Amino acid sequence: MNYDFTITKDMAAPGNIIDTIQKYGVAHIPEYADMSNIETTMRQLLDNETDSSYEFGKAARYRGDDLNKLSQEILDLFDNELSRSITQDFFKGPHHFNQEIFITHEYQNDNGLARNGFLHFDRMLTFKLFYYVLDTNASNGAFSCVPGSHIKGESLRCHEWAASNDYAEIGNRLAIDHPDLGYNEDSAIPIEGPAGTLIIFITDTFHKGGIVEDGKERLVIRSHSRLT
Image (tube, rainbow, N blue to C red; front, side, top):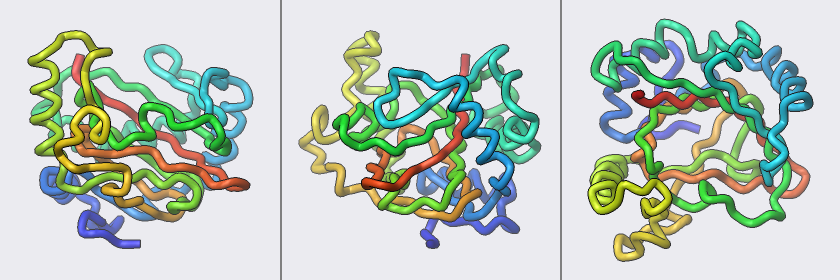
């Protein structure tokens, strides 16, 4: 499925991606990477390294020295000329930034909504690269967002931090903390795509995780980068 913020793989140059993100807060590149070997590796990692507190299936997080546990094929998804260029462009130069890589396998839907299941902006500004490892649509938890909302999201985030320096007190859920704006979960559109689809977005963009229907699954891998 194509959107106004879709970029074809052959047009996925850093300048095109950054221009699209500046306009919409998000860029969608279908079938950007081959996931055939990565899927098997990810499932093995999740069997061994799962965070037992994850309510919706299996999850693992890697940062610092833990990144060495990942295969080179996985690391290459995020450590390549394109991702380095657009990340540095977003942060306005080769600044030092922290990177984390998350892998998640969602197949449970009976534990209610986690905080990221509500339409929200992130409390800390983060640049995310997000790969679908399986074909993904609205029925198995496609990532959803409100294109173009990143400008308002930045304003809200800055206003919240000006009012409180307590991370836990930052009100970032639209329907709960900013109901006067009129946004709710239905305001977001699901971004669908086949395995290997890459979604790049800034977290001031209003976004949320999808719900996986009974008997279906979602497998994704994403990186988070933010300034230290």
